[in-house]
Image (cartoon, rainbow, N blue to C red; front, top):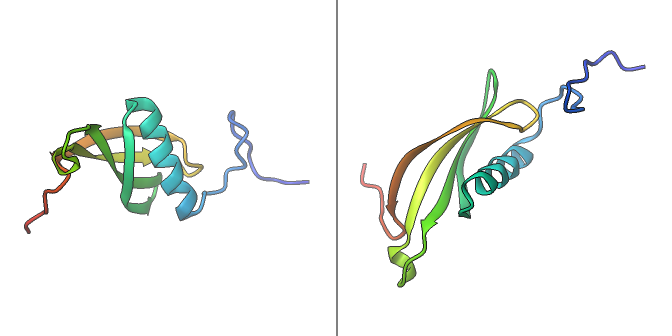
Amino acid sequence: MSTEKKTDEGHDGKRVDVPTAMRQASAQLTELLQCEPGSVSAVKATDDGWSADVEVVELERVPDSMSVMASYRVQLDPQGAMLSYERLRRYARGQIDRR
């Protein structure tokens, strides 16, 4: 008999692995925004779950290099459910960061 606490969603309380957190962040943000997913550019474990930066296509343009992309930070609980998101920046697909 397991002593782990079950949550309302039926999760067993364990933290999902990195690939699952990446997929969950991308899928949930895409569903919410109804935008084409790009990629997950960062993911890290936090005290409260996961933080992931997801790139999405906000506006398709021709040529493709002129499409408008956006970077979003997604906060997930330990089981991969979205808690919050915020847009960090918008940029043209072909734009390169200069740091």
